[in-house]
Image (tube, rainbow, N blue to C red; front, side, top):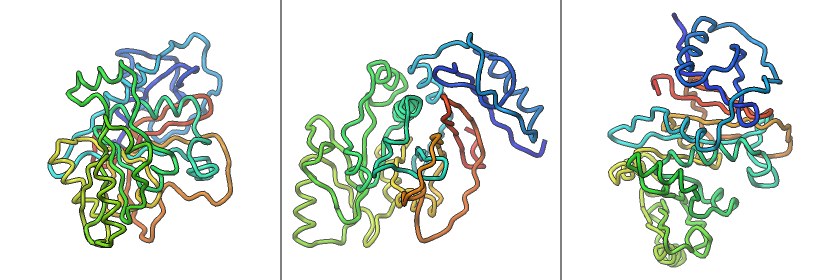
Length: 304
């Protein structure tokens, strides 16, 4: 009983997702608990993965997949929200192809991406990633928006862009939609005319939050966001911002997609920073679609 075991081992259709732990035939509904028990009796063993699941596996639509992600426990702390990190990497650790992550994700990753976004109260992203990926207001189906409202959330998650130098274009798509009001999280020290003008321009399409002096104080930003009612924050990169969160031990959950590609090149890792920080995590769930793996890790003291 020395090893902690995953609370659930999910099973999805081979056309959308499939079980990858080699634990036998499909089990749905209440059978998930039976699957968990079978996994408990085999912890520590290594099993082959069958690449060709049976043809009669039950099919799940994207809303079913979203429900699985929404059902995960994510208890917010009193001082800050629960922080999820969602990233896709190649098998050799690349996080981008030709400068963006779109070249790595397939159908399954897009489905997971939408399901994970549908869970968050707020999406946080670094300025470089937001501009490179041409971020705009989040888009969810009517069913996902209704599910959020039923859970007591707003119809759409908010977005916060982190930028120490305010390296943002006020005319970018994210700030151009008058019906959507993102946050810009920055520092308070740069009082140059250029920075002041940028802040004023951004303030017409965003809420500017100043936390920290020379560096953005991420812990203080999370604390303010928690006071505003945001209980779950989804971090979407880039690698420098991810590293800062890891250094400060602010990551509660990692959802990692492993794309079935070798990329080489000079792409950065999932997290890149000057300080090494070891933060133990435990595997909570493993899913697959075609040759992609979808892994959910939580910090070891969490039981979500």
